[in-house]
Length: 205
Image (cartoon, rainbow, N blue to C red; front, side, top):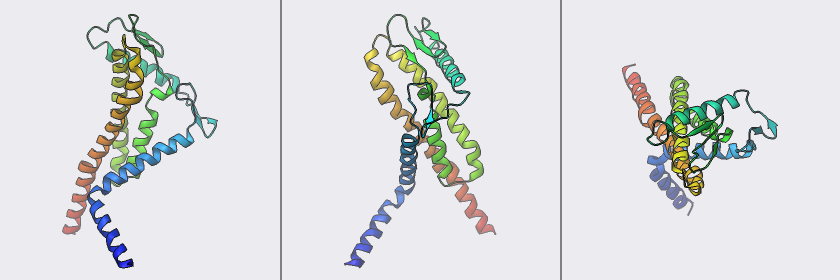
């Protein structure tokens, strides 16, 4: 009976082996996601960030919100028929109808960037390459965030009821899809090349 159980466990482990990387990625993703939920109890719609009750709001927070608002406004005005966009220091809206989008700390993408950085940092792969890949990935996430905010403003113009489904639904799922694709590139390109190189060096040694 014990042997049967052991064999069954081995068969299950063998069947999951091709998905080991994905499972490890998901494990890290959920770990950092729920760690954030537990540790960071600041109001996502407010101006302060709290770590276990202590205010850790960085000095650059307001500057980041100002920059993000300006960048999103620039992107929006690249689209046709959007020149009447009103851009306040940390808010965007169309006077002809829509929703006033306030840029707060929850909009900055800090959470997603920290989760991405944590996943890559604790995933396998050459450490020195992580030093440039993590900032590069955060830059990609920042570009997506600018586009996300801009499109939410455009798509809710005249249809404010769309905000929740776009902000809390579609674009949030795309956010984590981008994180996943960045991990896929890390795993399938960078880690694989490093593994092949290591094997060749061992064979030539």
